[in-house]
Amino acid sequence: MKIAIGCDHGGINLKPILLKYLEEKGYEYEDFGCYEKTSVDYNDYALKVANSVAKKECDLGILICGTGIGMSIMANKVKGIRCGHCHDVFSAKMTRLHNDANVLAFGERVIGPGLMLEIVEAFLTTKFSNDERHVRRIAKITALEEENFK
Ligand code: RB5
Image 1 (tube, protein in one colour):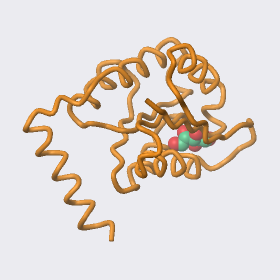
Image 2 (cartoon, helix red, strand yellow; image 1 turned 90 degrees about the horizontal axis):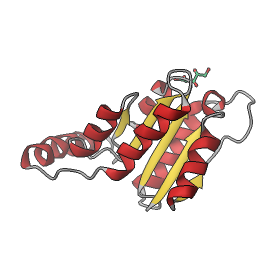
Image 3 (cartoon, helix red, strand yellow; image 1 turned 90 degrees about the vertical axis):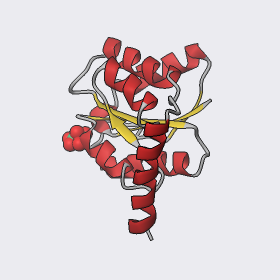
Image 4 (cartoon, helix red, strand yellow; image 1 turned 30 degrees about the vertical axis):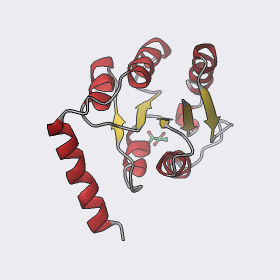
């Protein structure tokens, strides 16, 4: 499984901890930046990660900014992206099970490294339930995208 990773300056301290975890667990990843503490726009990194997942170059994406909010809003503007903004393990698990989320976003100013890794583990190891009601609800999201993203 290949994971697309992106952060802005607000997520720059958690990212190396995340990358080390992915390496230890044997996940392949692509780090789309940013790479320095200089202030940048979260939009640009969310877009790189979302595009790589939407084009199926990566299977899942993980985004880190100060709060995770800007990253998740931006990623969810890309057709085919369902980005879950999660700061607890239960939500991270449920956004895979019920929403088939393909991107995860969280904030370095909200959670610490220990909780982050538990959230990431839940996100990466939980599969979509494929339950009929969830398939139906996701199909409604996809239908809206088809209508609005022309
Ligand atoms: C950057 O200061 C901060 O606004 C950004 O990391 C993020 O929290 C935006 O939603």
